[in-house]
Amino acid sequence: MGMPSRAGIVDTMIGFPQEGSGQYDFIRRQTKDRSSREEMEFPVEYIFKDVPKGLPTSDPVSVTLHEMDRFGIEIGMIGVGDETSRTALKQHPDRFVACGNIDDPNDVGGTVRRLRREFEEFGIKAASVFPAGTFPQVAIDDPKMYPAYQTCVDLDIPVFCCAGVPGPRLKFAPQEVARIDVVMYDFPELVFVTRHGCEPWEKLAVKLMLKWPNLYYSTSAFAPRYYPREIIDYANTRGAHKIIYGGYFPMGLSLERIFSDMPHVPFKVEVWPGFLAGNARRILKISAS
Image 1: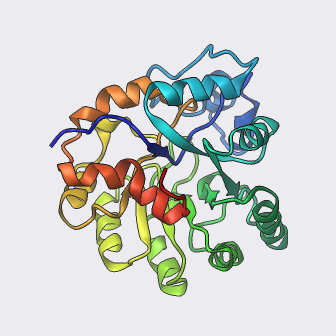
Image 2: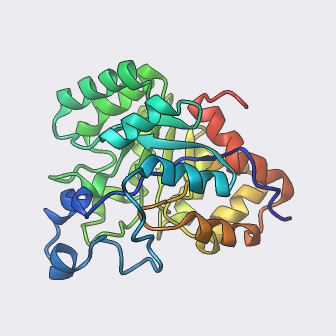
């Protein structure tokens, strides 16, 4: 066991420092507790310690690239919804790949048109969705999600979907892991990657990955010391091709925190290459460097 030397890592969830906290207004508009609405700059601060703060924002792309270079991250997957991300994709196409966002599945037709437009304009390699954060909430298995899933199948891109109890103080029902089963049944060609842990249904997530060939798990938003034991055991036995590294910089974790913990994760030697890069390259269709 033991993590190999860091090089060529693919981070399936990374971003750029931003001024203020306006990017979380979509969460605050549906929270009801005072702490979430008025006190916490980041609506999940009660969970994370040492959230990266005070990062320079005059050149956010350079800040993220510097951190990526420090820790051997060759490629980061980013959104396309803001000017900083679009600039990064244009100026550094060898370092960043684009991910579309299913941010309002209530607008069924608009979502499909947006995904297709982003595919044409930015070459998105995936789409992401945060079901508990949609407003009104749209569950993983809601029929309103189905046109977006079919569009991902048509475009031959995976969907990255938050699953499990969300960190923000929102209702968790839309993200119950059991809901994934019917989606995989109805869309056997859809590549579906869970984000943010699947807690407290990690065992069910493993059972479903055993059952469905196109179901994967990413480790986003978790410091490596907290990777669920069920996920580590699965990677070390039958699931080495199913577990994908995802970070959370700068939203909630520093890369220093992540990669200080990472060498202590008890993956078998043969698991590391796929986890850190190979599995992501395969499903995102990124050529090897």
